[in-house]
Image (tube, rainbow, N blue to C red; front, top):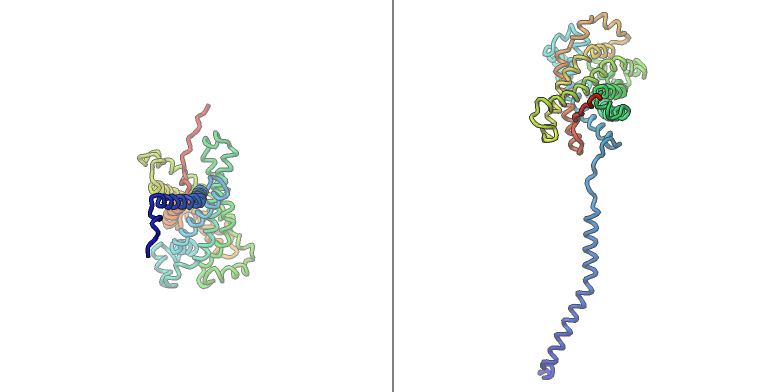
Length: 354
């Protein structure tokens, strides 16, 4: 079969090619709006894509983050040293039976098994988590609050008073949260056979002493914890400044996050040793009050004597609290770094007298 010769003429071929080009251009024009729409959509999505939210300093989220850091710092560390705490409390309440650190460990393991060293870990974890949230969260709040009251000039000049007032205010609240758990913990740890743990210990404690009995030791607890916390925060803030000024060979701003956390741990350990010394007499009182029913503070002082009140169980408490406080500051500042916040203890330049 043959096609007509007219289809192969130059005129016919040119006309066919022109029609093909026009058709292709028409298709491109119809697709262009869709391509432009897609490009605009992608561009708009990228421009409005959600970005990582930063926590503003001194905002509600900031204080909540500090509270969570406090839960991790205090709850984890106090729970981890429960065996040391068990031995310490028994040395304080039964010194004739538990005459030393290693002898105390042996006696408890021999009589109660290794599980005896972990008695009271549940109220320890719950109580010190609650205390840590209040201690660190409210410290950051009150430090800012008192600084604003004083104004920039006086806040810089009297920064130690700001640290003292902020930490004391925070600990006053924190101990109210801690006290019920501490009361049950000490009883479980120091009275053999009284209760297996917090679950059966709490209702038994309430049945014996009433709900108010859970806060019987709050005043001695304030006496132990408020000086401890003042030293913990004020000493830490000053030691951090001193380490950056005299020990660390470069400014804080040039240190890596790891180096800054190392400074936090070192300053925390030094502060912890001082904390243990100033708060130890009240710690002896709290242990005795919670382990012995119906005894008064005066009777405990008469029985123990002033020397024993200040020294009984002190070496173990120095080791325990020094390590504990160093770890707490390390964990707390590590969490702050994790959520994008600066480490604690930024240097405050003093204001010159006019």
